[in-house]
Image (cartoon, rainbow, N blue to C red; front, side, top):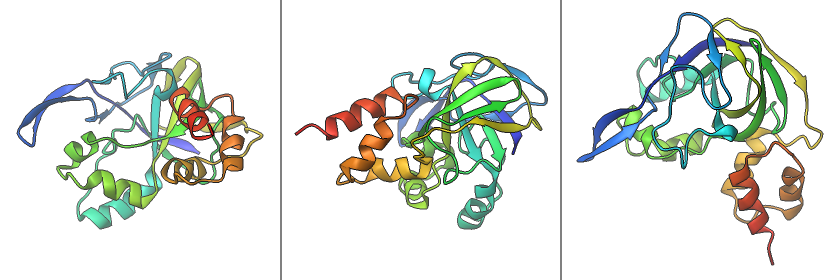
Length: 211
């Protein structure tokens, strides 16, 4: 597994459906290694910290393997960082990565916290208000990480899984639990056993289990 591209960007103002919107979804590749702090790569930032960024969503990775299908579907080439991801990766797929798994990426140590649930700004990035629905239908959400140890990450760096969470809930399985309001409570409890689960989803799933 490896990092194909490292992508960062600062929030910018764009016009969308008659409104001015501040968004950080536009990312551009960097040439070499850059520092990763607890909540951001250097040169990166989020526009709305109430729903983006923070310790549970410090780094967003999207698999390079998905790009070809997207390019076929959309009928155009896509640059790395097109999905707003910080890391375009190879070999790191949602159906084989578990919530709570830890990975050494460059010199940093990352932990998987949740899949990505897109907001309307993905539609801004692609110039298509239906993109959020299409993204969810594709079932390829990408992977959010928290930072266990700060370090440096650059294109070409290896990605090594250093620990695997015992609950074995894949990123894909968590996405299905999010989307299925009638999900089996036993599956929800198994996910809640993962210490690294993002706080916002822990609260959501605990509420679902209330009588």
